[in-house]
Image (cartoon, one colour):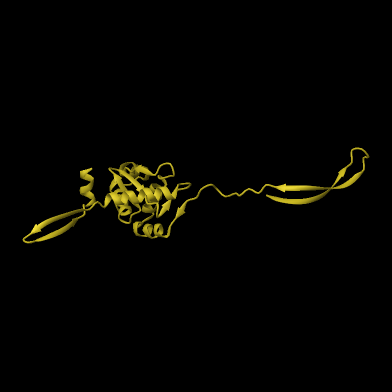
Length: 172
């Protein structure tokens, strides 16, 4: 809040003469900053460079990215539906989604359900802390490891097995 003293000439109602009077002028300063923002990290740009090979790829990527919002952080992505909108093949969209998964721009949560990486891109007005916390939990659940101990001759051998994503999906 800003306060200034302003001097003005006013009419005296009793005498009808002009007189000088000081007024306190108060400006209520409002920040015109929007309540939220979209945040793009450097790793997002690097990931996009590795995914994009054509103008169509770029249009598809932006369309997929824009499907996610602060209220819609997990989406079903149907390659067939997206392909119809862009008048392209389902395979083109599937390959792009696969590339987005490889560079970790997306993570597959379940069959056809995906999340956008909040460490690369935060949708407008989203809670970055919560999204990043949820992302870490999803990442941890996808890297389940089993440690198997077995006896070989007179020694114990420990083997760590990491499931492959394709097989994990079948188990769910």
